[in-house]
Amino acid sequence: MRVVAEICGDYQYPDTVHAGTMFIAQSMHFDGILAANDVMALAMLEVLDTAGLRRAVTGINAVPDAIAAIKQGRLLATADFDAMKMGCVATEAALRHLRGEKVPAEVMLPVQVVDRSNHAQWDKPFEARACPRWQDVVGAL
Image 1: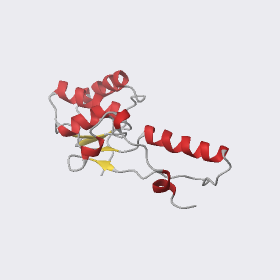
Image 2: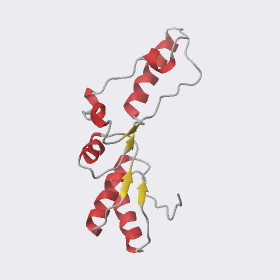
Image 3: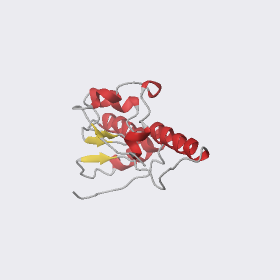
Image 4: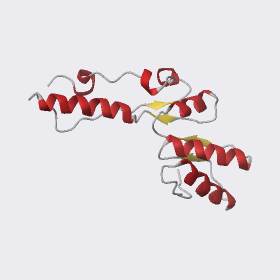
C-alpha cells in the first residue's frame, strides 16, 4: 500500500466535501480512501459520485448512515469504534470506582471491522444498540 495524499476534513462533512473536491481536481491516481470517521467517508462518497468515480472507501465508527451505505454497496467497510459503547463502559467504570470497586487502570474495547458480511448487528439506530456487558469487556477482576 502506498499513501498518495492526505486531506483534512476536520471530521466534518462540508469540510471533507471541500477538501475532497480539491483533491479530485488534481487528477491524482488512487484506488481507495481510508477516512478517519464515517462522516468523512460518506462525504467522500458524495465527492466521488459527483466526479463520476468509483473507489473503495472505508470509515470508522459504524454510524447508521455508514451501515446503510455498506448495505447499498457504496461503502466498503467501517470499524466498530463506537463512542456510545465507550461511554457505556466509561460510565460503568466511574460508578464502580465511586462504589469503591476494583476498576482496571486501562480498559480496551475490541474493535471489529464491519462490512457486508457482518453488518446486521449494527443495522439499527444507536438507541437500539446494546451496551457491552462489563464482564465481557474487562473479565473477572
